[in-house]
Amino acid sequence: MTTCPKCNAKCNPLKFFMVSKWSPYVCKRCKTKSDFPLKQIIILGLVIGLLFGILSYQLSKLIGGFSIIVTVIFILILIPLIQYYFMDLEKVDD
Ligand SMILES: [Zn+2]
Image (tube, rainbow, N blue to C red):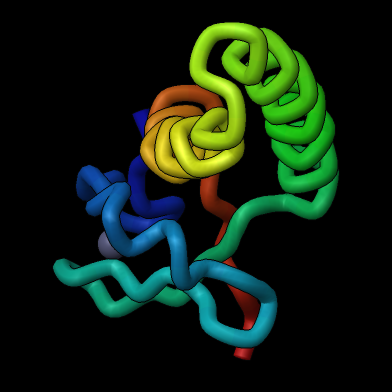
């Protein structure tokens, strides 16, 4: 589970949507700024891209045109879960 790199407080995965180099995650306990390492972001992007391709293709056979919408919703729920369970924040230097 993703924790603050400084004080080890548990992070709020709902805030991960906003996390980037330009708007880092801010710990609510110690106010430390952090973001995800580029390598992990690239792997996440590859996994999500692959999942998107497989899911939208498989779903399109079942539900046709709605498959893109369902896949996007699924991916949007999945991204913070992957970040929460498999990714680590690292401290950002001001
Ligand atoms: Zn903290």
